[in-house]
Amino acid sequence: MKTLLCKDDYLAEIDRTRDRRMAWWREARFGMFIHFGLYSQLGRHEWAMAHENYPIEEYERLADTFKPQPGAAREWAKLAKRAGMKYMVMTTRHHEGFSLWDSKVNPYNSVNRGPQRDLVREFVDACREFDLRIGFYSSLMDWHHPDGGRCAYDTEARLRFNRYIEALNTELLSNYGKIDILWYDVAWPIEHWEGWNSLEMNQRLRALQPDIIINNRSHLPEDFSTPEEHVTATQRDWEACMTFNGISWGYVDSEQARAYSYNAPRILRMLHTCCQQGGNLLLNIGPRPDGSVPEEVIAPLHAVGDWIKVHERSVYGQLTRMERRHPTGGCDMVRAGNRIFLWYWIWPESGSFYLGGFMNKPRTIKFAATGAPIDFTHDGRRLHLRDMPVEPVDQTAGVTVLELVFDEEPRFIHANRFPQLHGGKTY
Ligand code: GLC
Image (cartoon, rainbow, N blue to C red; front, side, top):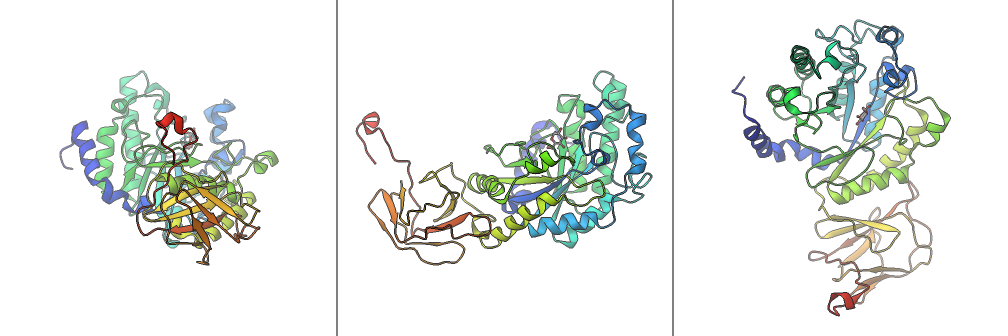
């Protein structure tokens, strides 16, 4: 192991290597989050052990009734691929402290107990079968380990717990081949990187997987920020992690929760913000206790995947980050160099579209999915598209995309409604 770096040198080192390590991630755009664990059997949220104040001995019984079907991870990966997702992140051990792999560090695991299988191995094999990049979620918080709470006030307990957490992650990054993402969660009850020994731990873990990217939840900034349950851009690389229903990461057995599940247009709205503003969307599913995929997520993900298939150019790859700009209330933009893609949420039924704010004229305008040309005029401040269909052309998810191709950089401004406030300058 090479000499460990001080914090400033470490941060400078990962800044220096980030573009190379993140290149695939920045073009991938869309991933699947999987929350699966003992809590899935309760069907009442992944925090049920805490919410319902389970004594450890009582909660541990779930470890012997947990019997996911073989092939479950393959179903998840197959669905992720069909949905147009490029990577997956699975909970290898959630706050409940149960390891889903053949751990020699944590005997409370899926080989010793109920499943009697290495579920992480199955997940990794499934990701590779479907050519998906691989992420491991690893909670720092642990409600099962005797030092999980004591580490907050007892130095010996904290040092033991630091070693335990690092040993778990060392197993994960040593025994399953190339892993692409380490996704920490909930660095609590210790509230600073020194207390987690994150600086040393993450250097040693990076030495095991030199190309790995790490999120910002071990109290060090690492490689990307993680807005949760809101799709909000940050200046640095960012990935919005979202439940499928706005309520729970783990499986919830409730008709009401199922009714809240997102449909394809709603998912595309989230994905659009990521495409427009330089981020990624990590959309979660919480499999049922047997590992099967909840019915309510299948049709929306199929529709999203079918939609992406014909709109890849405005979803994946190197898009040009921009602020939110929409020339009408019913659509919003994604930019790729000199091309602007207008994703229409509300398709005007007038057959005649006015798009304000385009100050230079595009060479062509067409339907992005088919390339069919659109007749238009430009009066120096807005575009007028004529003879448009009165129905949305896209029937997969109801989101029709127009493509504007410019010969030079598109110049778009929001129309200035109060020229008197800007020295009389109107545009
Ligand atoms: C929150 C929840 C945790 C979930 C995570 C996903 O930290 O506490 O249960 O796994 O969000 O980002």
